[in-house]
Image (cartoon, rainbow, N blue to C red; front, side, top):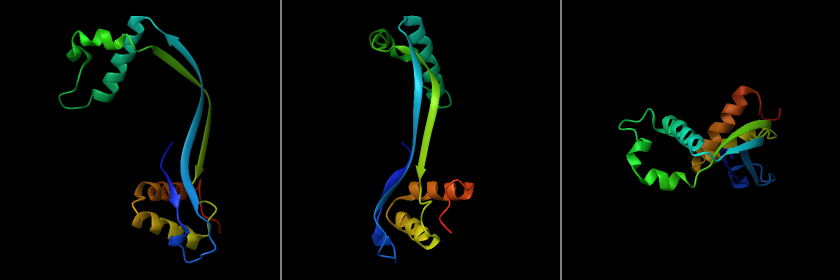
Length: 133
């Protein structure tokens, strides 16, 4: 689930507008293959740690855990996931009149919905989600 949030008609001059929810979402269909070998788990955890810790100053390493690693790693199972299908859906104000769209953006910005407003602007710039004309 990406950014999402409530859109209030209270932000709009046209009081005939209904409340709605804008969102970004992606669903994946995957084929998962598990590998319970301790070495496969070790390699998977090493790749994960390198990815999330690699660029950090004083980066954490698996070796920092000492003997505790073996106890915790026993509860982890490595896997590979092959993506079979992707289903993305974005409801970001594309069906709104331009005046209502602007009021939604202003309402979101005024009420802490900066991330959702930014997503709506990105989608409008890309042409994938443009307000009705």
